[in-house]
Length: 371
Ligand code: OGA
Ligand code: MN
Image (cartoon, rainbow, N blue to C red):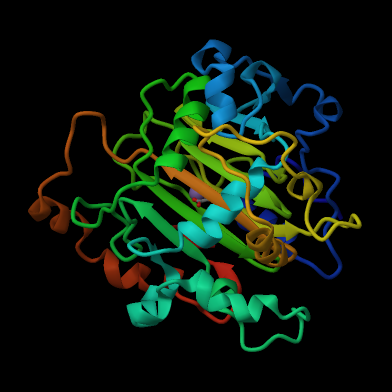
C-alpha cells in the first residue's frame, strides 16, 4: 500500500516516518517528490526566482557554485518560505565540503558526539586516527569501526547544547570562514542579505541511519532561514507543518541539493526516515564522482581535494550521507539573555531530553522532539 503524499490526522507524521523508514521490503517511493524531475509534480512544485544580482559570478565561483542564473530553485505549494535548490555546485566542488566535514570540521575545538563518551585526547585528530582503518579495503569485515565511522554529529560556532536545547555565549568557538561564506551566498540569493552563519550542526548518516521528527526552534531569531546542504547518498526528507497533525510531504534530497526553511516554513516539523543508496555503478553518487574541470584561483575558498584525501572520503561516502545545517542564532546586534534567566528557562528539561542524542544501540540520530 502506498502512503498518501498528504496523509493527515493524529500520528500521521509518525505513521509516514515508519512507512519510509522500512527497508525490507523497501517502501513504495512513487509519492516522493523529486525536484530533479519537477515536471512530474505539476501543480505542487513551482520554479521560484532567486536574487541573481545578490551574488556575482566570481563570488559564486570562489565558493564552488555555478553562476546563480543557472541555478534551479523551487517552491512547494502549501509551504511558504520553503525553497529547494537542486545541486548548484560546480563539478568537483562538493568534494571540498565533504573533505571539510570529515577532516577539518572534526578537529577541536569543535564538538562531536564522541566527546560525550570519550576523553578529549581520544577524539582529537579523529581523521588521522581513522586513516589506518579506512585504508583497509574490505570495509564490511573491518573491525573495530574507526572513529570516523562512529561519528554522528559535529557542532560549529555556538555549540548546540543537546541537554538544555539551547545555545549560549560560553559555548562558542569561531565559525569556519569557508562555510560562513558559502552560507552567506546561498542566503543572499534567497533574499536574506543579512544572514550570518553562527551555528552549524553537521549530521553524519550511515546508510541505515535516520533522523527523528523534530523542529529547529532553539535559535533566537526565527526571521532568519535555516540552510541545509546534502552530500552523498540520497535521503528521504519528510516536511510537515507547525503541528504534528498537519499534512506531510515526502521528497528526495540528492547530493548537492540545498533546502532553505524560512518564513512560515522555518518552524515546521521535519525528519529524515531513510537514506536511499544509489544503485549506479559508481561507489558514490555521480555528482560526487565528478572531478574539478578547471583549477581554482589562488583566492578561491573551495580548493581541490588531494587524491589521498579523496580516497579516504570516497571510502567513507560509499555508505554515507553528510548534511550540514547552518543557522543564525542571535538577532543582529543583540546578545544572549543573561545566564540567570537562561538557567531558569531550561530548568527541568535536561533529564527529559538527556538520552535523545546518545548512541542508543539503534542507528537513529534521535534528538529534540522525538518520534
Ligand atoms: C537538522 C536536520 C536534516 C538532514 O540537522 O536539524 O533537520 O537533511 N537535518 O539531515
Ligand atoms: Mn532540522
